[in-house]
Structure formats: C-alpha cells, structure tokens
Length: 519
Image (cartoon, rainbow, N blue to C red; front, top):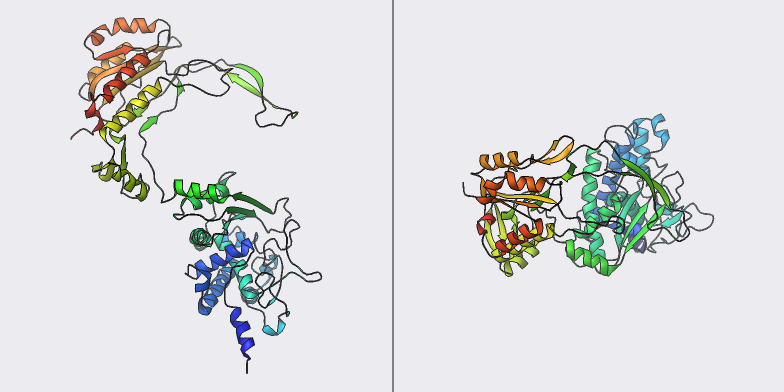
C-alpha cells in the first residue's frame, strides 16, 4: 500500500511550477505551450505525461537520423547546443542498432525509479529531487561563468522531474540556429508566456519540416527579440532580457550573454509598435542616383576613421576614392495616396493598426474605397499640406557627414516634374551624354511632352539652378521658348518654382491631382 506522503511526492513530479531560474522559466512556458495551455498551473498530470512523451518522440526521431547534415536533421543539429553527449546525439549512435537507440533515448527521457531518488530537495523549487543532473540535461550547469548549486562531490544539480522536463522543453521556446541560441525572458509572467508560445509555434514548423533557421545578420537575435516585444499587445510590467547562450562541448569565451531592456523602455517600444504588423505602400519613391556620364578617372588619397575611439587609441587608416559626377535618378510622388491608409486586405496590405484606425476615424478621417481596398483618408486640407511640405523640403535639403569638409549645396540642381495621370515617367532620357559630358536634351523633352500630352495634367515644371551644366540653361531657354510662352513648360530656379507650386497646392489649385483618374 502506498502512503499518502508517497502519493503526494509522485503527484508533485507531474506539476509544473515557476522558479527563479530564467531558463527554467522559459522552459516552463514552452512546456505549457506544447500542452496547449496558457498557464503552468493548467497543465494536468495527463497533459504533463503527453508533453513528456511528445518531446521524447521528437528526440527519438532525431536520434535515428544518420548525421546532422542529413535531410530534416534540424532538431538533431540544434540538440547539440542544449544536450551535448546525450543519448539523442552521441556519436556512438552510429554503432548501435535502431532499437537500441530508441530504448536509450526513451530511458534518458523517463523519470528515474523512486527507489533511486537521492533524498534531497530540488535546488530550484524544493520538491523531492529525482536525481543529479548536469550538462547533458541542464544548459550552462557546468559553465564557470554561471552560478549554480552543484554540491561538492556530486555529478550535477539536484532537480525534481518537472524542472528537468522544463529544461528539456527549453529549446522549443528559444531561437535555434545550431550554434548560439537565444531566449527572451521577463519576470512579467504574462509577457513571457505570450512570447514563448509564439516561439514554440515557430520552432514547431522548423522541427516538423527539418528546415534550418536563417541566422540572419550580426543582430538577428536582438531584432527577433524586438519583434516579439512589438507584437505584444498588452502593457509590460517588468524588464526584458535577451539571453544568448550555448551549452556546446567546445569551450566558448562567452557561453552566456545577457542584454537587458528596462521596463519603461520596453513598455514604450511595445506601445509604439504594438498592435500588429503593418506596411505602408510608398508615397514618395526615389530611384537610385547614377552618374549620367561614366567616370573613368578617380583621385585617391588616405583618411582616418576614429569615431567612437577612446582618447589615445590609434585611428583606422583607409583609402578614399574621389570623383565628381552629375547624378540623376527618377522620383515618383503618388499624390492620391498622400494621407490615405488601407485598413483591409491580405498579407501586409493593412497600413494602420486597429487602434490607429480608430484614432484617425475619431479625428475626422473618412472611410473610402481606394484601389480595391477599404481605406481611411485624411482631410483634403491636411493632404495638401503634406504635399506642399515635401515639395518645399526637396529644395531645402541640407546636412550630411563631415559638413566642415563637405560643405556645399546639397539641393537638387535640376528638377523636372509633371503631373501624369498614369504611372509612366516619360522624362528618364532628358539628361544624356554628348561629347563625354552631361547634356540637357531640349529636343527630347519637347517630343516627350507632345507624345504624352493626353496623360499630362498641367504644365511640366523645370527647376534649374543657374550655373549648373554651364550655359546649357540659357540654351534651353532659347530652344524651349515656344513651350515656355505657351506655359507648357515652366522654367525657374527650383526654390522659386516649387515653392510657388507648393503654395498653389495648399490653396486648392490642383485638388484633382489627389484623386485617381476615372477610367
């Protein structure tokens, strides 16, 4: 007959609790997510056994693969950074039979017989420990740079079975790359539960399909942590930590790195970006600025880079390649889209979160149909203002790096704009190469205006700073005199011309430009 105390001790080994160990907490919520629950306390004894069995089955499937390079071996490769030398990934697997590997992995993932329990309390939660566990089961348990509670003379930490299973579930809640792994942790249990559940769902796809995780750039883990925060819709009440670690056998100079984000900043970021993922279609599109005339000759010299260096440190010497060129590029200002935001559609078509849409609607934005989708549109007065600000800004560009060295006019020296009913830019060939120099082609401009007259809604605006391209401005005034007299072309200094156009737009002279043309 089993005593009540013994029954309680056994039942305790099927109950998940949160402890003060960050990785155990991440694992606890990963275990909870696999069980289909939102809180550790909701995991019943049956669900506990089901999750343990599922994790064991995943380990068995990985152990039966021939190598980490085999198709679908993502989980096998990732396991080396969590459970090195375990029955799941030990090199001796290749010499054992299929059934032997299955039996050994299942034995590893089975609670030790109660007669073998050490009679100690779990160092994390105080319940009866079922054994001593070290690096094979507990990441960083043997790291010299992490604090642990391994008693002298013992092989590892005294742990209860649920805490061990939380460490077994830890990889499901981490960003896995096969090298260093990362986990997002917070003492805000609700936040931790939500972000860990999302990571479990992501990893489930990788484990099922065997697809590797894109390691991304140098800040991939940090970016993913911020994305988890930005996707969290509630307030954050504690700080957030990004734990980057490895439990691999090869010694690492930094087996654990902790990047902390204090609660006020975390809450601010969540509020700024929370509420879903949106994508704003481009209102002002700019093409790449490319030299009109290919440059064959360059001047070379040397410079130094010392930004961020401490006093007394040697700067980095690097070589400069200097050349002068006239750069040209296309621009597109989508006037009907100014102040217009889609609110439905598939994928990232939505341009506003639900909360932002409500705020805009309460401020007077109107519901419309825009290019096949529902959208909110700001008042015409505000849309005029935004277009005018952009035009004035284009003629007032300033700044840049090392302004004392690169002091000069940064504004476009020549701007050619026309209101076109379609999406075609007919002015891409106005600047051409003639005798090895950039040349303004008045004849081509005149012909393009004639050909596209039915699509042009108003005159063509040619802003040209005096002195740019030598005397070609004066030549163009003569060659285009007829079009200028007919006001088919307006030519003046960019600041004057586009400042005047901005005033006209704000005064409502071109309101038709803010609507898509009727078919």
